Length: 282
Image (cartoon, rainbow, N blue to C red):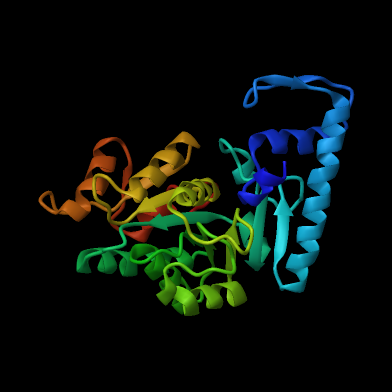
């Protein structure tokens, strides 16, 4: 159990134990599809005590550090994340957690964006912000970082999702941006604050970006890229995917053009995004 916590992410096994006990299902024996074995009610209660103890200690530590820990059982936990496959059982948060409950558009794209990609982001993102829609992205180099910066400059709202703990910055040159978002916006991570960036952790970040978004917009991406993986995760979660079309001979637009060919919404203006959001009239 301790080793699972050291990895920084609650497993579905732990999540089921915690939720089961909190829901007062202590007399049930149930089948855990991820562990493929049964577990007694007594053992579930014991495991729950361990989980709650770790959560309580971590919450105290984070409050002292000016951050918060939100679990899947808390009212602040966004319902959109509960709907996805393998939701994170905990979110480490720094900033305004109320943003988790608001209408959101995910904006992702290549780290090596072109002039065209930057122009498209500048043309679209500020107008989305002005309609009181939260911009969600991954604080990565390129399109992600630009989306956060434009949102702040416009006076909008944004959530940065990390693939590492809150005490680390990746990439390093985004230190000032991450600090600004922690103070004025919201930065979240499924990992404990001391967790360094590691490649295998970024799919979890991408899943959260997709899950928080009512619509995911891919601005610029190659055929094989993390942005297309995020788009696939969004589709798996029944989220609308939009893509900015590009030149047919530009490798940086090949991913977006492929998404559109597969049914993604072509996005030329902010209105193309806003018209797809639920219960919104523009």
